[in-house]
Image (tube, rainbow, N blue to C red; front, top):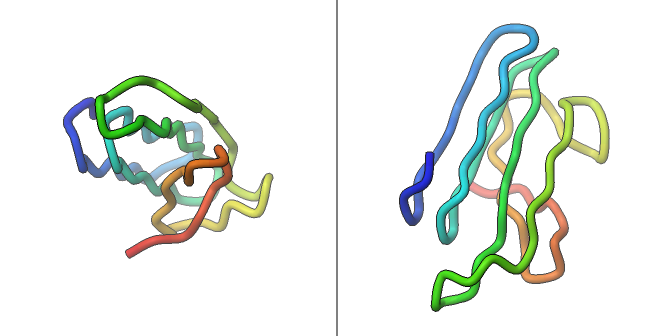
Length: 76
């Protein structure tokens, strides 16, 4: 998903949820992965990061965003 405030959700092993817009969020089930970016208010790409579920503190079926420091944070 590339729109601002978009949400990407996947289920199933080997699936990847990618949300690339401003304030995007993503979640994946066990065996999946997420890709997120952090953009400033002008839409400039500041950070982009990916992780498999179970690595980097990423839990299954939990929504995440990237913060201004490029760190994964849980969200609603």
